[in-house]
Image (spheres, one colour):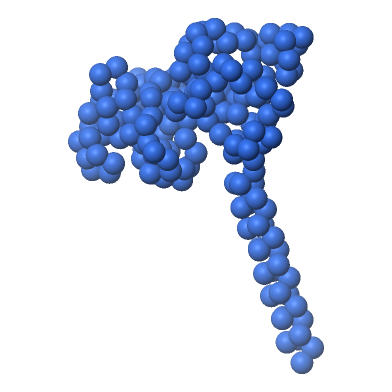
Length: 179
């Protein structure tokens, strides 16, 4: 009898721990910043010259300057009109929200840069691994993305368009779907 009660208590304790972890995961996925938008989220740089600051305000020093319009970045924190961002290299800092756009872009496998010749990300005609290859993207190539279905994203770059595996880009979360 005592063993049955102990097993029941153990099963109940495990169930509570698992459900608490599931609730925490769901809350993390549903986290919203003061703007009411989800955190984290991907956006792009709107301007050709964007100062990355060490704090949320113009009184803080500039630590980096981005010179590429449309570069994808991840917003990880919000404070007033300032957004703490992270780029594909992991560099973090603060940018004024007016310099960010809701347009989506991605970078083809930045983690594969410098891994040698013959390393590519395939851009395919359709959203399936057996579909024909439209283009081979070198790691680090920037692409614009119009939609993702959770596994594939529709991408455009320099005259080529097609589908790229979501797991091979930086600019959309695993399983994220949007149009």
